[in-house]
Image 1 (cartoon, rainbow, N blue to C red):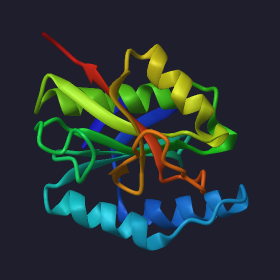
Image 2 (cartoon, rainbow, N blue to C red):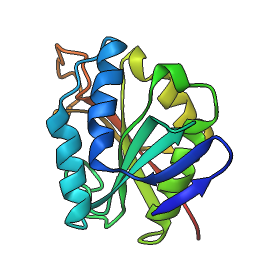
Image 3 (cartoon, rainbow, N blue to C red):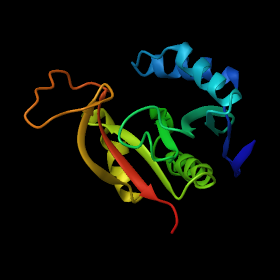
Image 4 (cartoon, one colour):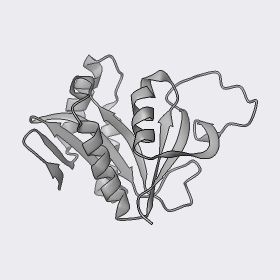
Length: 176
């Protein structure tokens, strides 16, 4: 399915071939992607658990995001709100409006299921651009503080590793 299309950009459902393209591109920019993650997202989409989106810029996969209809963990697990996962745009395609269009499509999909959407964002500086974008789009922290590896951190608790699993949960009212 196509969610957005203009002369340069198409937002569509992820296809199996996109996973390998993302693995190659993220490896080239110094990341350590795992093809199994993309295969799992495609499987989850086939099973109706999520909508997996690919942004295709000038015919090349440029970014992706996943809208899970039921959150796996965190403070929103029991609320029935869709959760946005693993939003990313390849570095060479950033600052072209691709991320905004991907998020527009993700929020539109989430809005079909609930009046609120949620997400978690990493706390290290690699997530700085995403943190700023989410705040500018109207996402607000949920008030449960920092979470690590799916568990809420307690006051004065020591968290030794600042990695992708150290997150803050945010939500956005889509309507109402």
